Length: 293
Image (cartoon, rainbow, N blue to C red; front, side, top):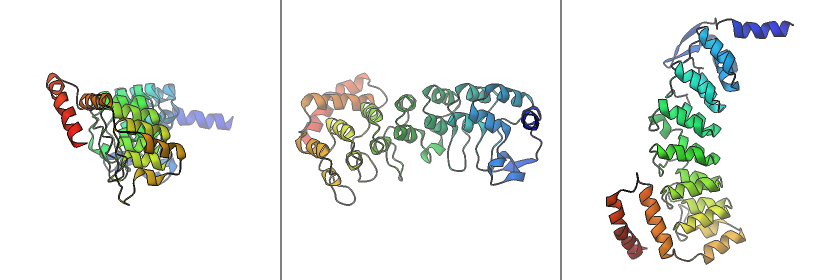
């Protein structure tokens, strides 16, 4: 019974510890550096408990209350993939652009959860081009985790499909490293540069290194250069012992004319839509590609 009463008191009484501003965020200064600097609002959001969350907000809890690490209840709702909790918090004024100390935004957290509806909701209140996204990129995270639907939502909002983050490369490179086949295919269809990876290390190097035969096949189909060398001077073929991948790298011939046409069209479609001017330029683009490749 004592446990029940204790739990009831947590949810029935407002948070009565002293709070202060830390890095521009309201937080509990009495419990710095521990899990206990979280509030009941954080816990309710993370667990997807809509009714307790609504009750806490009605009792006057600060919707923007952050831990010393900069984690807000909206971050927690997004990590848990809880659409209705996130919606309630946003309706009460939660900051969709809040940035934690490690650079994570609610959009980044939503991409971790893999809920495309939640990603779309956050984008109604936030910009996909928020500067913090260069540090913790939602697109890279979605691609790495194989959340294809989230990748497609982000791309539809104008995210640069070839954005390269120095430490992790491009979204296509991340998807190849994780053997996220559907994401690799979606990124390529959206116009991702098949040669753009992490520095000199191409997506084909990454896919070959991790044994991603399906990814290797897709990359070759979209014109990946089997002869390119990474910073160590190695070709993709030198990075694998997988016989099926070696066979692909040895036997896949030059792109056919139909593949080149498809590549040019997809590339143009991935660059903010295919308008009349770009359609007229496609034959010239294809001619240039044939001349120099």
